[in-house]
Image 1 (cartoon, rainbow, N blue to C red):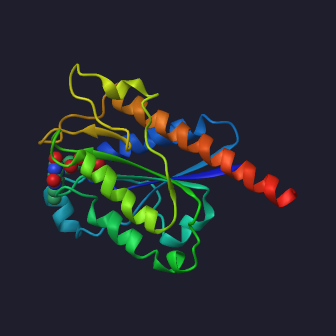
Image 2 (cartoon, rainbow, N blue to C red; image 1 turned 60 degrees about the horizontal axis):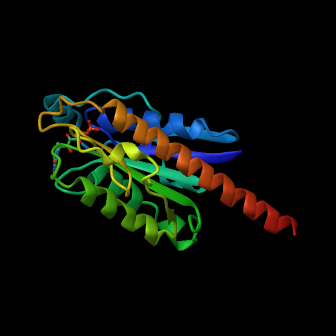
Length: 207
Ligand SMILES: Cc1cc2nc3c(=O)[nH]c(=O)nc-3n(C[C@H](O)[C@H](O)[C@H](O)COP(=O)(O)O)c2cc1C
């Protein structure tokens, strides 16, 4: 089995909805085992309550878990133009894995939810890829073979750098069918690439 982790942070459920679609897409590829996990919350509970954060019973991952996967798909909201601190803090705790080159050669992909169309959507997708490249991971985007991203009719999330959605400044806009289809597409895309690499590694070992 190829092992794929979909790992996300979400305060209001937009990234969570995309993460579920990413997992669905990855599971659609035969021979793929998929785990859906979130990173730990760092915001104090009283602030979460006041800010109306959505409850989330998805199991929490720890940085040590990352090593067990062939591919890791990360989802984050845009906060002040970049990934959420919760996600960055999680990655910053993976220094031990970096030191052992434990993630080198694994597949990575990112997806994002952003309040406004030009509030940092692509910047979040691209800059979230930076630490993943420091880990030596191979970045998979959301290729134009997912044609939904090219529409000029209405608002669409995502880019060649990854799937996404535009939540609206008040968060009232949940991911559209096109955004969810993009996330499913990316999940399947990553699972297929990871399976090919895992198959090639097995063939090399056998040779
Ligand atoms: C602290 C904070 C900072 C934010 N910064 C931005 C921003 O820079 N650009 C933007 O378009 N939206 C911004 N937003 C809106 C979030 O991107 C939006 O709430 C998020 O995509 C919703 O995803 P979620 O439901 O998964 O939490 C911000 C929201 C918060 C709470």
